[in-house]
Length: 320
Ligand code: KDG
Image (cartoon, rainbow, N blue to C red; front, side):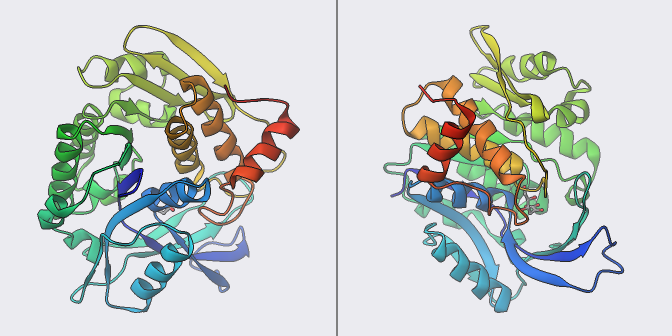
């Protein structure tokens, strides 16, 4: 089995090539692959670690494209099933010169929404050191929420370290109330929680990094909360009361913010897999996030070990 595992919905994305043109009027698109948890798996694999991705695609050209592309990124496909009755999720994405691009999703009732929990008991967890869980998969359907919870319980029973990214997608939830309740409950099941400041505002009514961290540290499972504070970097607080900030990197030109949060998560995860200190893991999270915002695709900016080394050299920083 691999060192890393995650569960999610792959998204075939038609990214607009028409700068600052609405999705209604854009006419030029190119096809790329995204999906928050898949982005994380791709980045973990690119940094040289073995990964498995649990999901379900449709028996359609998008599903075949997704499987082929995932394989080309060296992410394990053992637990990707095919559902003949439903389509593979896809979306349209704007190209913007300022801020976050708008996306429009075609994923309601997709194949991933029908991934039942039967698969979970057959997953080989031997050798898995870290599992990444995010708030998107439980949002897409009641079936996927049940499957997600079953996996989470198995990970806990098997003492596997879990990271949780709230990844709020309000349009995927039946109500904001359900989103807040479910995400906060699921976050409380993870050892490491990775929220953003804007998410804190929605999830517990505060964008103060310390208040966000304290909220999740009240529970008895969460050991560390890392709050992403945008270009300023990340604020870390641990269950034993230590706190510190790891500064972010200056980016000359932000091309596309999509995939930066996933880049942050995979930076933290891979550094922990390599036995680095937690501070170094957060430094790597900041580094991968900064590299990702400088590229157009959802995961193109994630570095290889050599690219990461070169970035650190250029920035004059080092991991411990
Ligand atoms: O975090 C990046 C993802 O948002 C993107 O790759 C695809 O919209 C997407 C999603 O919901 O997974």
